[in-house]
Image 1: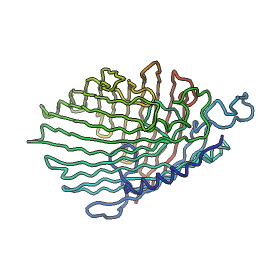
Image 2 (image 1 turned 45 degrees about the vertical axis):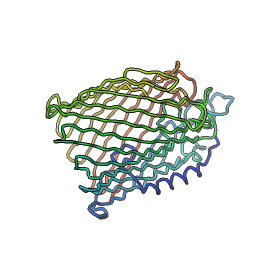
Image 3 (image 1 turned 90 degrees about the vertical axis):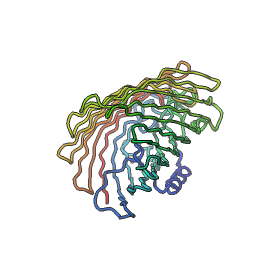
Image 4 (image 1 turned 135 degrees about the horizontal axis):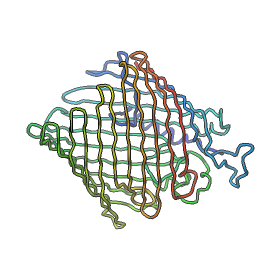
Length: 423
């Protein structure tokens, strides 16, 4: 299968990372290793450069030319996802500057994903440049009224748009501003905020997957789903007991698409509930509400979240929950997600960390399309030295859809080993 080199997007990805100053915060997009060594002193904080070397055995890199012995296919492509041995070269940094006036958290990395061609000869052309960057700046973080400005940038092959199939590179950026207000003694907290996000798509390959009959599974036309999303929200918390609070979560998303092919949405969501400790070891969050599309296409549904965390010991926690939400999405306008999830984390001997987590998502799109997603992630991580850590693990990603197409129906197994050096 021929591949597009992606040099144009790769160059812009580097420029965007540099323009953002290698940003980062407590977001999942930048998985920087724990700060080790002494770092480089920057004001009252320290800068910690790091380098990750990761090897990954991936069973689902993409659809390539048919191997010898497989039944002929008119497209000339294999009907099965091809596996490959990939290398990740990931330089990055983390900067934390604590301050009672202006606290900064920055992090960023570049990730060159090299498909070695050891398992699938034509896969090397699919190698690409990814990256992530986050910024969080907090003005007067300890004052009754503070200001938070943040930005998140991600370029990867894991898109945030649920309707689109595999084989797509996503360039995502979201800028946010929040105003936490804690009047009086802090029993009441109100946080208005606004955010603007954009996501652009590029095909990872130059041909569409096998059996793809609709545009949502064709990476060659994914750029017609490029979008902008403006969100206004208000979060509230009233601590009426020392360890229990009433919580409020409201917001409206104004979703518009830069190209034709998807209905715009004006999605209002509001949930209210309680969060707190049931016992010294058990914390529970329970919220319920409604989501409604105020645009011409309409649509609304009940939304809710129930989550519990159990502190088995000071070094082991269990978390599980259920989430039902309504989200804007390309091609269909809206989709509902019924998600069950759970995870366990443990720290043994102060150096060996263990984690295991999984989730099942039942997606229902406007119309008749339904998808089921299953994900698993488990593995250990060990701190050999303050500046040297290692990790290994296994991830499973499985998707089945009522819409035909290889990009929407697949099972992907990934095993990885990672070594991280941090100054």
